[in-house]
Length: 277
Image (tube, rainbow, N blue to C red):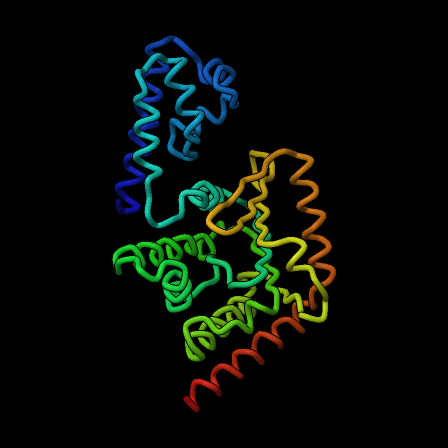
């Protein structure tokens, strides 16, 4: 489903939620308290600013006695091949975040990937998938990156383990393009980039992939990912520990200027290799 039609469908979801809520004589605050979210969240659902999680849609059906209509709509709308099921909610939250801090222990994160790099990663992970599936995933990653071009873009800080600079993904030319893209974004100050060098020790093994998101009107969230699984963490004590882990990574990483120099050096090495092959 195209992004525009998906947005229109979520707007229909919100309009239908408002209509049925008002017909039941329930305020946003009352409905929110009964489905364990704030009244403000209900208002954002109705305006299609936020999309409810499936369990919230199920509770709305129970309270409004709507025979599962919101659950069915929610299931249909979150069935999006552009993102893995476990990542779809995190991708949505990225578009709402005011600050994003990310640690990438092995690969360049999706918000920074070039199409060639994204295609090579997807092919490596799903080598027997049809071309349509591959292109859906690549398109999804490119669409996510629009938040970095918006006037109201979030502050985005990324720590790349040196692995992400050295593992050849898609061949030397694709890697050179990828690293030059990251360097350009850093020079433009669109993103903040640090590199955690091999000399820093076993930090990648200790932490794994980590993404921290801050919001203007909601508590901070952390997202971690493993093989074919991902977890959104919003319990305050756990998120606080995740922030502390990220602070340790940032302290151990190279300063931004030295990080940029290392990225550009690695890009030059791949570009030289591409010219000789």
